[in-house]
Amino acid sequence: MELQYNELDRIRVIKVTGNLDILGVGEIETKFAGYCAGDDARVLVDLSEVDYMASIGIRLLTINAKSLASRRGRMALLKPNANVKNVLEMTGIPSIIPMYDSFESAEAVLLGS
Image 1 (cartoon, rainbow, N blue to C red):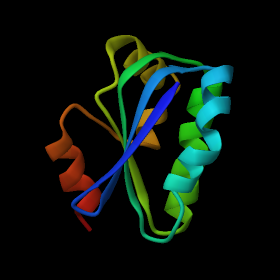
Image 2: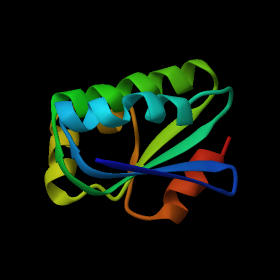
Image 3: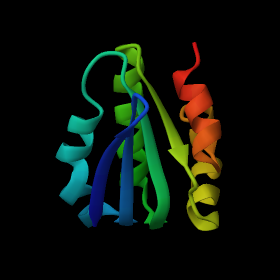
Image 4: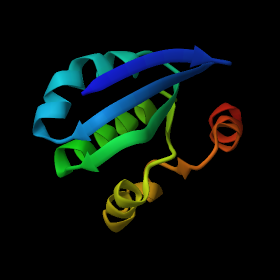
């Protein structure tokens, strides 16, 4: 499991690579939450290189998205592959955390009012 962090135009970009299963989440959970800390943060989670999403991976995303929202922040998901996108859609995640296929679309929403 690999986690990369970058900041682009006031957006915190977290790129996750590997499987978001019990082992993968265990490796990145603390660092991921740290990247989502603070008030009014804008976080974009790049899922383009996540091959598998288990329920614990969904939990990681929803807990941090709700925490961000409670501090006037926002989270969006970027480019999940077809299998991961299907899992996220089946569990209703897009109603909590919007998904985008391009950085520009996500950026417009995250930096909008």
